Length: 149
Image (tube, rainbow, N blue to C red; front, top):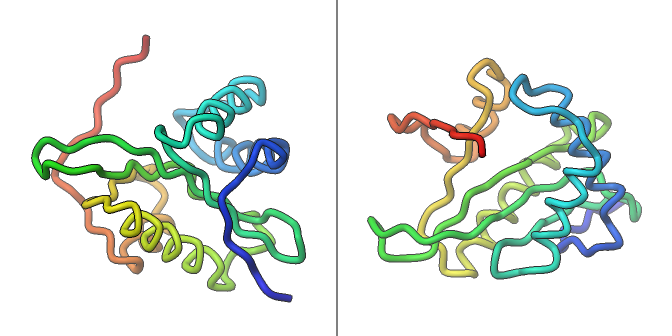
């Protein structure tokens, strides 16, 4: 049973929505709304200049995903990545597959000549924070703020 990492396609929408439902059911700020999630996924998948979604498959079943959304940092004078929606199916956790997917996301971002990856995680999710720190991420003093439109 080998795993494969590839970019997602529109054929993967339902599997991606299932993973997002799992993720959003764990986070206080988000709600599961498959129609909204489907629209968001299609915006990314149909416009690679916005970003790309990497999926991890095992036995031809998608069990993990991560969104890499592109923007420009004027501080770095270069393209950077906002990493969102890193999620593994519960059956795949604790087996090193999340690390495999994250390392692929880092390598992908380097290949795209991005100079930084930024992510947000729930401050109460200590296992996620530990996971990201093991991948080389550091807690920033920057404070995320949101204004919903």
